[in-house]
Length: 332
Image (cartoon, rainbow, N blue to C red):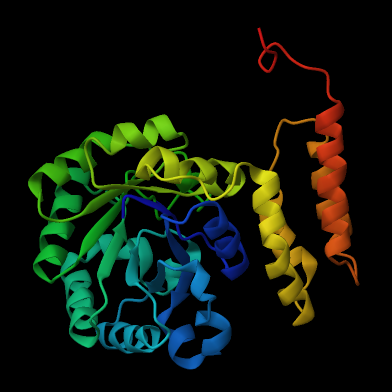
């Protein structure tokens, strides 16, 4: 769990995860959150299926009924996931209506019951992703109470988003930025639970920040920074694991993505369903705006194929090659 990419609704689908795996072989990847109802009653292959190349891969579940979480965990185990993660941190209206996600911070005993039921049902690691508290809770009291109960119930690790969630008064988007971060609290939690793996999440956007956190906790989980600047992932294996990066640069990684895109297109997938995860590449470089425009406006058109993406990438490569050298890039 030294480094992972956070589960993000509408973002970390199977196409996104395949792309991320190309750039880091060591990161642990997470699915979008799936509710227990979707797993039990939905189209399981569509919802749970993944390419083995994505592993190590964790499934994040949303729910609050121990028996349903146990049943969903058994189903997930049949798909060969490497971990099952219980969502105790999402503050969206959807989870509030269903009384799960961050709402469960208010019910640590129920969370422990859920973890225990999941652990009894499967042999996979069961982890919990939580906030440091919700609404008017005292974070130190709330976080430690939750940790004590879920660790006693058998949780294999905790991933802590180091912000409170405000269930009333802030939107899900505001909940990602507005409540202040409290990294020190998560560090104290690790000291209190030295034998439980604990990862930290929230506002960590650079390799330097990740390394700093790893001096206090066991792992870091990165969300928007990894998605919006996917080239960041190319530095993860060498910087955090001491291993060679899979590719020298983003151009090589994208070229390695082409066979996957071709297979998906042949199966009827739309090009835009995959290229939408590529808009963050090349930010700030000459030609990047044109690259994004082409993927945004042209990839959604009927019949758009791999030639469009290749053209956009090669056009950008040409723009970069023709750019005037800057002071930052000049050799002295």
